[in-house]
Image (cartoon, rainbow, N blue to C red; front, side):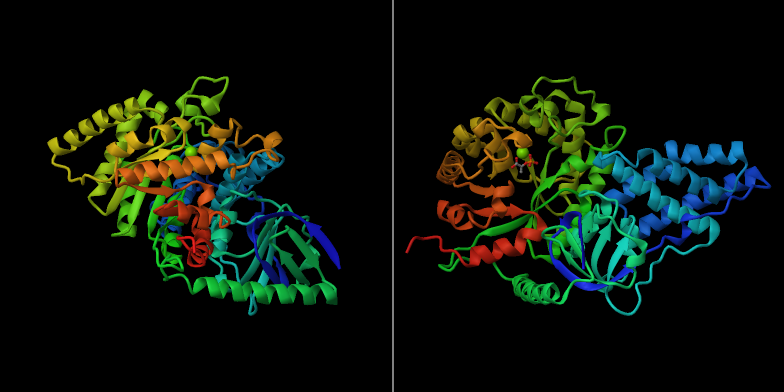
Amino acid sequence: MKIFKGSAIFSGIAIGRILYYHRESSQVRQCFAGNVKKELADFEKAQQKVAEELQVLYGEESNIKRRQTALLEKGSFVRAVKSMIETEKVSAAYAVATTRDELSQTFRNLEEPAVKERIEDVRELSERLIAVLGGLSTTIFLGEKPVIFVAETLSPGEILEMEKEKLLAVVTRQGSEISHASIMAKTIGIPALVDVEIEEDWDGLLAVVDGYTGTLYLEPDGELLKEYEKRLKAEQEEKEELLKLKNKEAVTLDGHRISLYANIANLDDLNSVLFYGAEGIGLLRSEFQYLGRENYPRENELFRAYKKVAETMGERLAVIRTVDLGADKQAAYMDIPEEENPIMGNRGIRLCLDRKRMFKAQLRAIYRASAYGNLAVMYPMISSLEELDEIERITEQVKAGLREKGIAYKDIPVSVMIETPAAVMMSREIAQRVDFLSLGTNDLAQYTLAMDRQNPLLKEKYNDHNPAILKMIQMVIEEAHEEKKKVFICGELAADTDLTEIFLRMGVDGLSVVPACILPVRKAVRKSRREKK
Ligand code: PEP
Ligand code: MG
């Protein structure tokens, strides 16, 4: 038996034979172009064909599709391919393969997640372009029996084109937690490891993948195998039990019902919101529309995304949070001046109120999309009533503009994130002005403890169960209830099942968690009592 350590991307256990995947199309023979103009024209046709494929594969609003289409249409990758065809007079397929390899080579040691993501985009696009130009297929056949899929890298497109029921686990050498493939693996819910020193001759060998510890056991010995078989059985039974809760209500043992919503950070998560039976979206973090790009998103692009959310959710509530940029969420095109202490800096609503054009475009998009479903709008990082005054003024202008143009919209519910101590202290007054409150416990904890939530030095000291935080949550719920307004929790604490009963006893009206945590939290609610016996 050999043991290999990697990083766990998604938990779970898998036992099975390895399928080592060779990406056949990665070698394209050097071939000189007889006719440069024809190669350029073929390349342009291939660009168009691949753009259509992406549309079919990922859908119009998908984040991956948007990024890859942008790469395909303009930017350094396409320029490099064209310039190679022109100057070196090589075939389009060869220029694509070489540009891909050069880019991967140049950036292979960079750990930056955004760079890794871009390299994966380039890799997937290149495979598709080469397939179109050279007639090679991108479909992967997994064989008869389910396998542990091992590869150097994997693109989300490749995962999409496999038969998912034949996939037991995914193990790659390259990839990152936020890489597309990892996101896909999370969505399918199979164990996934990256950073594993994989070897080609593993093909066909028996292995155990432990997605809890990030370990791969190659040719496991009898005892270990038996132990993992037992654990796998227990895990499957637990999953089946949990899945039975898909369409059940979140009701406590003593008959109190609470709402369970999902937090999502891109449109690819919409399906899992429905799959796990969430009541709706309690927090749509809209930052994905602003980050990883070269310019502000246009109103229409924002609108199309919100319309898709509204239509997909139908009558279910979908709370769109206006963009919370600044601090750790920066985009170069925004030119945010350097700050000494960005966590305390010009972020969230403060930045939006400074950049009214950007803010108004987002509000217009949200209100336009409101006509297509059951949307609500939510504002992050509020710390004063004056901010609410200004938001109300701007919203009125936006609505007036829509009316003038005869564009339909609804007067949707308005909500505020309670994530600064100031908002906690003013929660009664805020509740008088909005339709519901949502506690952002991630930021509330860091501002209450005066500890940066991302500072690794404070990892041991950072206690988000500190009674000061719990008292604040209790206070907000009481103050809002005095005003007959509901309170949700949408920070990570909402998924902490050790606190579920405590929150219920405080009287919280709803919890909003990532899709994969909906069933575990629903289970915790159903095991809790709201009233003390
Ligand atoms: C929070 O602060 O709890 C929250 C939900 O917002 P984010 O994590 O996006 O800052
Ligand atoms: Mg926050």
